[in-house]
Amino acid sequence: MYLHKEVEHTPQQNLGISFHKSVEKKILETNKVDIGNTKLIFNKPECEKKVYVPYNELITLSAVFDCLDGDTLYEWKTGATSAFEYANKLQIPFYFFVLKQLSLPVKRAFLVHWDFDTKKSSFVHVVNSKKKIADGENLVQTLGPEIYEHFNNLGIL
Image (cartoon, rainbow, N blue to C red; front, top):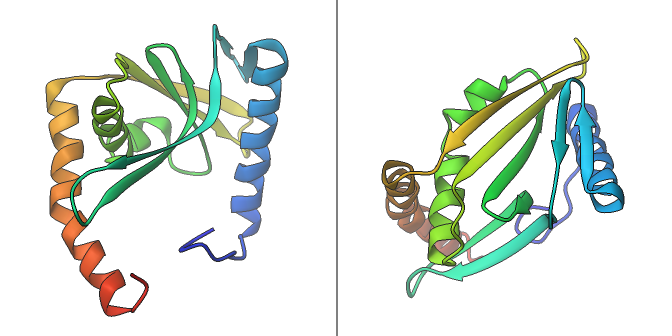
């Protein structure tokens, strides 16, 4: 869904969506999941946790965490992009910033990647830090007003 409208997904996106759903189902049924050689055990998992955080008079932050379990965030990834590459993008710093706004003390994130072609998993551990949170806040401060202006010009807001 984009701007509250259904969109068509590519076959690759459908594979990723199916993967997400199967991982979530397994976690909710058993509190554990095996993704290739990566074996994870959960305590009180909250899968597909959606949150909204008022940021300022123009912006409300929105995030959907694949799985939040105590002080650990999990993100499931598929496709050609590696877990390491995902770890160097701004999604996790943004999530750390949102979690701080919610006063949720998350210490780390694990990006768990499944490669459908090689049938192998990999994961990257990202430690939460003041720097990561600042990177997430900078993303919001830099792009937030531009996104608001764009949507406003389109008449969406």
